[in-house]
Image (cartoon, rainbow, N blue to C red):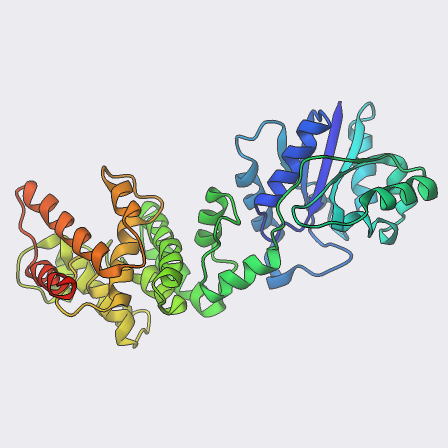
Length: 379
């Protein structure tokens, strides 16, 4: 049995972590690769105070379905400082016939002599070093030094992993910016749903939203937040306001129909739009939102209307194209996203109205006004 150990705080786990594990697994013919989540790393604190069990759950999601990759909470269960030596010794006790390997990046290779009892670590395990794209350093020289000083068994692997920073990911999440493929898709969705990387005031609103909505609706809301982050950059809108509007756009969706109708103040009898109008009222009453930019975007996210702003268009579009949407035609909407906001909105509002009418239902007058608005703008 050949077991690889890739340790870290994984705060959060990103694509490069998974790449490193897969590269080591394939090049070194490892039977198992354990992604070991540090509970209390000795050399640094866990930024943002994200609990170990949350980070472990994200690692589980990242390796789900990946052959011979496993999330391990051995260090979390052991408690205390997460020294690699103690972990290796425990693994060796559990697997006395196994050959153990540390999987590390080039940046960590030079730091090995500063670890807790490096001479003991390198007696217990070999080292598999994964180089990083765009980082040129003399790994062979460092490896030779480790061989001479400690008798280390160091192997430099050939495939390279991307350079991705967990620190940068956390900064972008705080600011409401998109992650641009830094995380596996399922991990990104889980990061949005858990909320642990968001500012405290947003987390309060998010927890309230989680309680008010069904799990499926809450997942949709978090997907809309993801889509809003990307559109905010593309369409040059306020990312933090977009995140709040996306979070609360369906805040009234799970109210009973009568309450939705009363709060909406709408007299058209078109029930499917009530939650949007009611949502603007609820966001103000229950969530303390006073910014009219956000409230109007919530109100118009289903119908649109004459005089729509680009920010309001952003929430309309994010709700329509968010990643968990799988209705027929959603890919066409996604493919039409471009810097030309008006062109997308003219197509989207017209297409949605056509589908509603095809089902024998009435479109809301506000949607007709939105169509006229974008027709005028594009002329």
